[in-house]
Length: 189
Image (cartoon, rainbow, N blue to C red; front, side, top):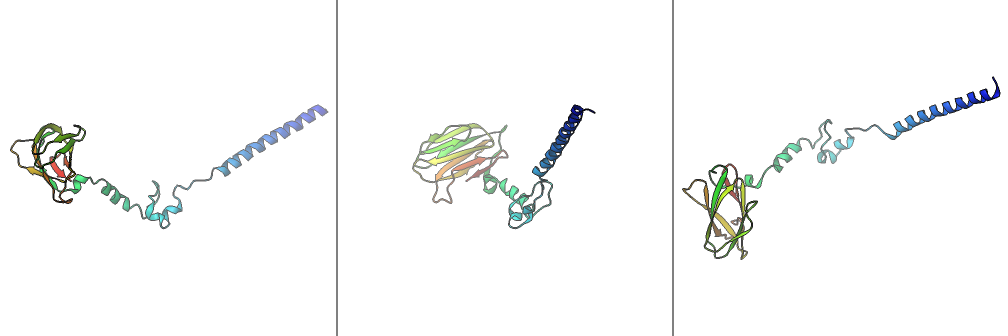
C-alpha cells in the first residue's frame, strides 16, 4: 500500500468515525433535551391544588373532580329557572301576542329584544304587539326613573298575554324584564 492510499484510508476512517460520533451525540442530546412528560403531575394531588385544579383526562381523580358536575349544573341554571312563574300562555304556532297597558303617569320605554328597537308607551296608554316568536324577552324602563311592577291580567283570547305595567312600591317589587319561554311559562324579574 502506498502512502496516498494509506492516508486516504486513515482520513476515511476519521471522517467515518466523526460522523458516527456526531450521529450518536445528536441522538443523545435530543433525548436529553426532550424529557419524558408526566401526564399526571403530582401537583394535582397536593393541597391546595387538589381542590382547585381539575386533573387532565386519563389521570386519577383528585378532590376537585367530584365538585365539577355540581359546578356545571349550577352554571346551567338560567334566571328564569330561578324566578317564580308569573303566569302561563299557550303559544300559537310558536308565537304570542302581548298587550301592554301603562297605568303609570310616566312614559315607559319598552323593547322586545331581537325584534324591536326601543319604543315609548305613553302614560295611561296601551299597545298590542303581535306574532312575537317564543322564547322572547321584553324590557321596561320608566322615564322618571320610577319602578315598574308587571301584573298579568286574564285574557280569553288564545295566544295573547295581557300585562299591566304599574308603579312598584320598592325594589323587591320592581320588575324590568319579562321572559316568555317556549313552554309558555312567563317570568318577570
